[in-house]
Image (cartoon, rainbow, N blue to C red; front, side, top):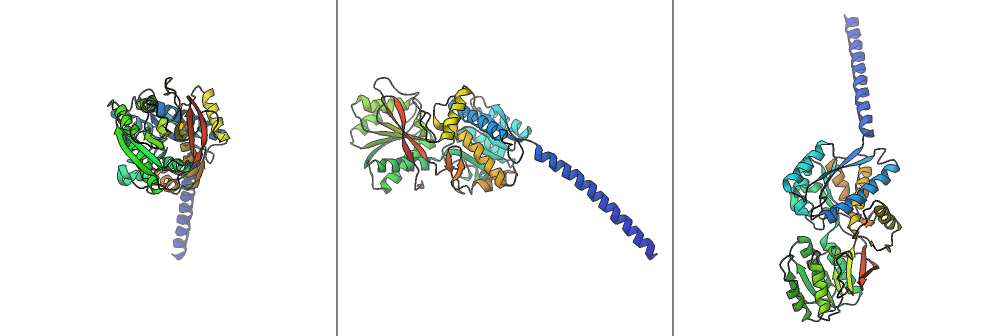
Length: 401
């Protein structure tokens, strides 16, 4: 009886061992297959609408960066694949459908457009599934828990947070010895407002004096009124954050009045596509990701610009860099996560980024700020409609707004 029981136990143990081996073999094979599968990045973007000038260059740069990374073996032996969906001018219903489609196609990370309001349907679709949501160039602190609550821990932007940009602008003004400033706020976007607010706070911290604060709005035809009021206050620099039709009107407004005082703008004022022929743009400055004028200090950035030109996607502003930097940042996060693409795991790695190298330089995130800060901004000056690199500036302090 005892012998029979022992024999039965042995048979049971052997059977269990065989079963475990079979299961382990099957599981191991499946894991090995997963390890070789590409990492799918879903990219919902606006191809021809109002956000296309921002979305298209970022996507073009990301595609080139992915090709470069894959040529070197990918990420842990896995290639990156970008699958896209056109949100058709960021129609909310279409944008949400795009996100759902991309997730169904296996997207482990989802990219969205460069404005947080337009991005919201895509972001929510991603974070509700536990997927990391990334914007290449949103410039506010809204891309994170501040807007999307607890699930916003999965939302990040590789744009420059407005507080950092505004602070860098103030520190540059201080370094030039400009001690008085006149401020003009375009009230259209949170980004526009936050840049000027950050300049205001940091400039005064540095001992500067704000002599006047004015506002205007895109489409309201009140830029010239703001310029006239500012012109009546002597300042060593005028400050704004704007683009669209208001930018040429703002700059030419001062110059038409004979006021040659320096004007400084944020990344919103990048490029020379907007410059007026009469009067020509002179003594105008802006901070940006990269110089697209052939003189960026980074060889890697200059090579990326050359690659974009060969791909017939020559960038008009430095904003293209957000797409390439985002790919670099994601690759670093995946490597630090030992190959995991789980949203919460990658988010935990991203918030620990401190001066992490990407194509454009070094970037940081934090638990509070899920949008890039700590970038070495390129300061560009335009004189007689010709742009050139003036120098680099990195904000030492990020004002709390």
